[in-house]
Length: 114
Length: 336
Image 1 (cartoon, rainbow over the protein chains, first blue to last red):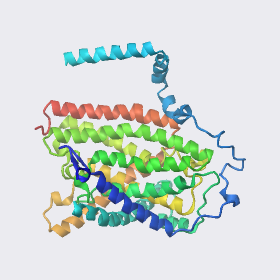
Image 2 (tube, chains in turn red, purple):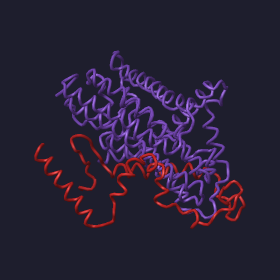
Image 3 (cartoon, one colour):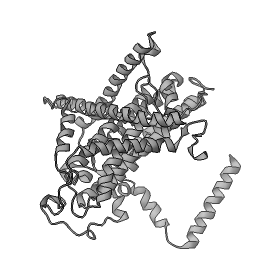
Image 4 (cartoon, each protein chain N blue to C red):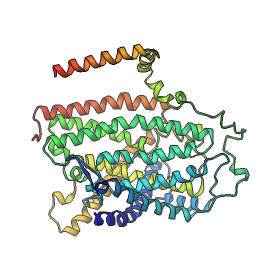
């Protein structure tokens, strides 16, 4: 029964089961609307080729998007921040341990002060 | 619990009809407003309904190289998720159907689901344009979530400091005007947060200047470039329902007043009057945060969009939050 109980924090509430029930009903409604439309064109038709302004479509390997490209807008906008943070990631384990100990010490000091 | 499940099932059908019809009507109004501001006659208000009908008559092309299951499932999930958001939002003085079983944090997460479905659909299209569009949509989502979260958390926090129980529940927020709780510093903070939410709305709805993921002139429609027919119709309906959700969220957070709070009237009259007043508020929100902004601005480049939301609107939002915290700390307004 715990699965269907509502999580009530005193600040807000959340019942995943009710949302799932609503989602299933909403999916059925969406499917009903979709079924009113024309069905898929048979494969092999000229219009089924990806739109590329008349150019030949490159292979899937050539259009693969790397993680660095995926977040380009974000990393470029926050370039000032990343320019400082990226060099710190040296890949040397002892550097990371040093950072960990340093931050832990800072947290303990702050916890003691506050 | 059984009653709640029944409410979810029956309510979902009713709310889907309401969300779709009202959403398409809002899109029609928006197009008319925009046309008039550009000295055009513009399409009739019923044009979005005609467009959906037209799309349902068109062939539904699934491109070669597309991942068919994800490509076809994405529009279904986008529309269904958009509809479920409305179950947690009120209509005038009618409280949300599932208001006791989900709070404003849930709404914030649910707002991301249609966008994620579009991203998945774009990546599944097998088109370079759609891939770039999906990439931009992901970055846009990361950009606007931060200021949106600040605005929501600040208001809920101010309500909790005033000693109001369940401050994150939509029914609580809808029935308590945060303006009446806050003091002078709080009002200033709320005005800043209202400005932030007005700018988050076009990004949530992928409207100009935040339509970078679709960008017709560069990407020919971006993540929707390969969508047509009934699949595109479902994405359009999802956008319409999401317009209702975003405008309602703004109304609930910042303009929760109802005529029945101030004028004594019979219960039925009160519901009708509050609903009509709610429609006016929603239309006003759409006018100022969608129509006006999209008419006066050009599309932002994706890195400029992140700068706008993370730097400028992030700072404005944090300033609003600090003012609201100061307001409570200095004992201005209502403090428990």
